[in-house]
Length: 287
Length: 253
Image (tube, rainbow over all chains, first blue to last red; front, side, top):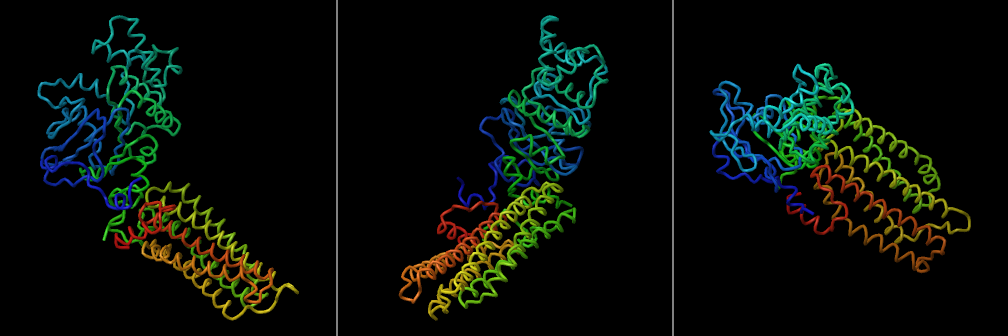
C-alpha cells in the first residue's frame, strides 16, 4: 500500500527534461505517462496549425490490451493528439507534427514510412458513423482487398464474418450482407465501421467520440464491444462523456489547452485526481 | 506544508464552485443535515449524562422522546445523498464528500442510539430500590470528565466536517488516549463499586453508561477519519494511529 506521503504529494510524471525541451510552454504532466508494455510510445509531441501550437510536448504511452481515454474541454487538443497517432493530421494543410511517436519501436513519422498501411495498423473510428455507400459485405471486404490480406473469396468471406462477429454485428446482418451499409441504424453503422477497422488486422484502434451520435442503448453496446476488443487490441478513445471514460478505460489522460495535465489509472483520476485542473474539470467546476 | 490533493483550494471551497450551482446547493444541504444531526447528538449526550449523574428522570425521558429526530435526519441524509448521486454522478472530491457524509450520518445515528442507551440507564437507576441516591461527588466528577471529553471530541469532529479540516481531525485522534484513560478509570471504579457505596445494579448501569459514552467518542474519531478521507483522498481507517498522527503533523496539519 502506498504511504500517506506518496499519495498526498502530487508526483511529477516520468518525463525527462529532454523530452520536454522541445516545447517551451508545456506543463509537466502529473502521473506516470509510461506503461510496462507499450504498443505506442509518444514523447514530446508538438502539433502546430500554422503558427498556432495545438499540442505542447505531450508524452504518453498506449499499452497493449488497454483502453486509454482522453478527456478535456473542447479545443484542448485531445482529438488532435489522437489524429497524430495514425498520421491523420498529414491531410491537414499547415499542420506540423514534431516529437517522437513510435508503434512497436518504429517511428511512424519516419520519412520512408507509407501512411496507408500505418492507418491499417492504427485504425480509426469517427464520431459520426461513415459507412461506404456500398453493401454491408463490401464495407468490410474493401480494406482487406486493397491491402491484399486474403487470397480468395472463401478467405474473404471468413474475414468478413469474423470481423462482423468481433464487432457484435454478425447475428443482426448475416441475412442481409448485400444490403447497403447506410441502411443500418446509427449504432449498427458504428459497429459496421468498427468491423471495417478490425478487418485489416489493426494493432491499435483510435476512437474519436464514437458514441456521441448514438442513443444510450447503442452506446452501451459499443462500450461492451470496446471492453471485448481490448483483449486483442490497444484502444485510445476521445470522449466528452466522463462517465464513459470511467466505464470503458483503464487509464485516463486529461488535456487542457494543448497540455497533457494529468494521466493515471482511471479509478484514481475519478476519485482522487492530483491536479486542480483535472479536479475542476471532472467535478464540473470548469470555466 | 504539503499540499492536499486539490492544491489552491481551501477546504471550505470543497463543496462550492460548480458550474451547475444547484449542485453546490444540494451538497450544502446534505452537509447541513449532517451538522444538524451532530448538534442533536451532542445535546442528547449531555442531557443523558446529566440524567444519570443528577438523577434527572425528566431529562432521561426527554432524551428518549427526541431520539427519533436523529433517526429521521439520518433518513433525510440518505435520501439527499441518493439524490446527489442520481442527479450529478459525483466524481473526485464530490464523490468522496457524498460517501463520507453518508458514513458520518450512520456514525451519528449510532452515537444518538448510545445517548438513548445512557438515558435508559438513568431511568433504571431511578427505579425504586435500585439505588436512587446521588453519586458520590468525586464519582460525579470523573463521570463529567468523561462526558466533557466525549462531547468535546464530537463537537470538534463537527467543526472538522464543517470545513473538512484535517488539523481538527488530527486533534481528535490525539485526544483518543485521554478518552481511553478516562473510560478505563471509570470502569475500574465501577468494578470496585463497594468503595463508592454502589450496589451491583448501580455499578452495571453506570458501567453501561460509561461504555456507551466511550463509544460515542469512538464515533467522533470515525467521523474525523472521514474528514481526512474527503480532504486528502486517503482512507485512513485501520491505520496505526501514532504513525498517522505523526505523518499528518509532519505534513503540516
